[in-house]
Amino acid sequence: MRAVLGRHFLVLTLAAAIAIAGHVARPAAQDLTQAAFDDLKHGGFVLVFRHGKTNAPAGAPEDKSPLDLANCADQAILSEAGQDQARAIGRAFMSAGIPVGKVLASGYCRAIEMARLAFGRVETSDALLLRNFVPVAGAPAPPPWPQRVEMMKKLVATVPEGPTNTMLITHFPNVNAALGVQIDFGDAVIVKPDGQGGTRLVARILAGRWDSL
Image (tube, rainbow, N blue to C red):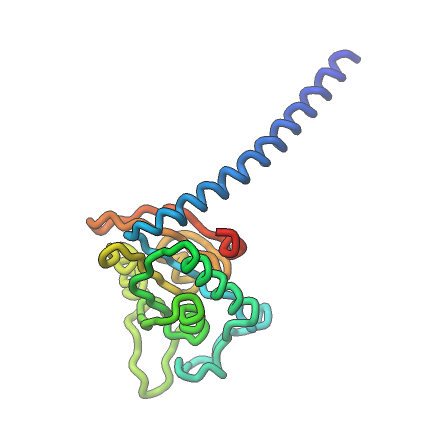
């Protein structure tokens, strides 16, 4: 009986330790995210965003193919929630006084809108287009997918000009292919280029954190 009680006490002790560790780890992770975000004030980082939530029904194709990128009616666009995510990003950067340099986005309407809502300006880049993009007849074709992935890796590894940070707004497959990470709508990955073609993943900022940064 004493052995049974001893084992029961040990199980409870381990459970309590795990619960306490979870409570300690969560604020610690939040502190690390805040510290990484604050470091952006000094410039020199590249942030890779997945565009915000869209109006595409679950499981349904997001876009027509072939696609005219100038025709937003044939594409999934930011939902109201996605627009709110973009505005929250803009508020976080503005309130923290973080210097924003180049803002590059995929040519899809949802990525362009996110960039404009968050940072007020945008340039498009073929390197950030979805893998399955097929242009309409007569429109210029982007480089093949493997080349686009390498182009994106080069963008991520390019040190921003002056004391600024570069913003890249793209899609899930692109982030996964170039960085090997999976992020949700409105999330971002902070990357530090080393100036010699290499990069270091610094932190991931979840979409739900923007309003608290």
